[in-house]
Image (cartoon, rainbow, N blue to C red; front, side):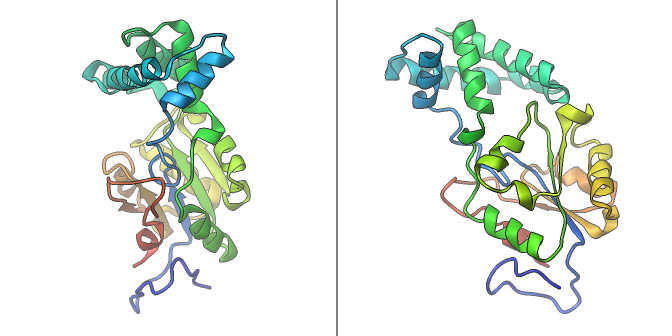
Length: 236
């Protein structure tokens, strides 16, 4: 049975659907642009006994994001996803370097980033995962991450639509290493040559081709309120 990924999607006569689909997490199934906000940071600081005015929270969000995305920050984060302990250490360390930040703010920031309810699925995430599930096509989420992202799927009611979660922090291996894609295919019981990887990073997700999979890369532009184009990515 060929799953109905989207209404009106063109099908080439010789196209065969994948027997398994691997999805990236951040920026592919769940939005990564609305996790850190002044309101969320202030709320996490309040839980830790500190009141944070909106203007100060907004400035901290901007400065922490700048520290994380700086050349030094990117270098420090290069291997942070290989363990949960390393991920927390690196991200809170970077957050503490922002002007006006300290250990409490850094922990509040980390709580924002890893909170299950902070991550929202794109509008087409549930329909596409449901269609694959009904068609009997197994799905793996393959993510470079430093925490257990299963909570976000549970919060969104999507846990039962995912066959396997293959997380770098559990394996000690991260994309673009072919080993993580092979591990996902092994867990799904489908050969790499009959599997599809869908992600948003040409280097990391696109590396699935080196492991023998087909890879589809989503456009960089995205918004939590707009479909991500998942159905189109699954097409011929």
